[in-house]
Image (cartoon, one colour):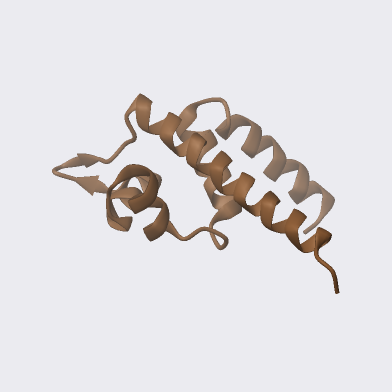
Length: 99
């Protein structure tokens, strides 16, 4: 990726991150391949992977785009913090284990 392309991408990301929907989309894009959406939806929302993906992508449901409710954005951010904490604990355990 050229430096000019990187600058454009970073500018676009900053614009996206100005509201919750855009910030959520940009953040989840970074983590897309690392997350298990089925487990995340079930564990943190008590819903299906389809429910979560509908909201992440704004798919049309009942004639209108699916969106997170304000309290669901909080659940999503808390879920990502919990997943990050689990990953850090796993990394620490690996670092501290004997060969």
